[in-house]
Image 1 (cartoon, helix red, strand yellow):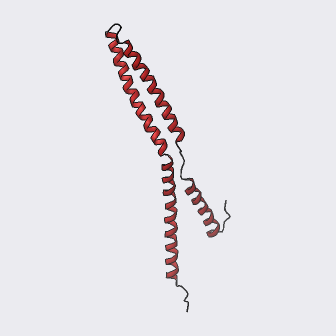
Image 2 (cartoon, helix red, strand yellow):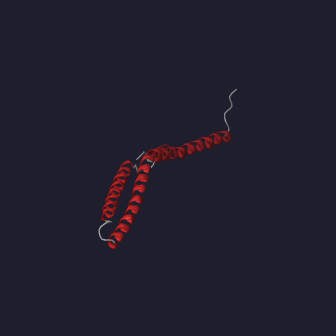
Image 3 (cartoon, helix red, strand yellow):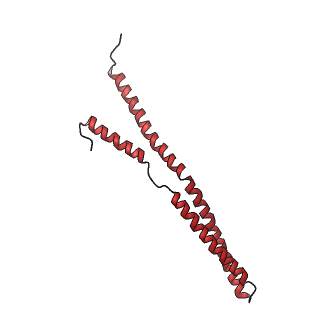
Length: 136
């Protein structure tokens, strides 16, 4: 009725189980890294806004320098332009700092901890089962 499986069959099953196990072990870090990236999408958006304000700061600084040069060439009229350029410059610096800080607070820098713990657990299990050592 039931035949005992031969070595070839047993080795084939072991090989298939090992392949499946390795595939699952490689799948976990991919999934965990995808979750980490998804969690950091909000932070990246805030960094993008901060970058936009940083570029606007450079533009405002350029306008300020141009206004200062224009003010040196004329006596009184352009000083209103200088004050406006300075105000915009300071405002953009503040907005860039605020949005950059908000993006930094939303940022989650961590490795795939579940995958690392799973691998460590597998190593402990293998040591205890295959080598007869106690898990440490």
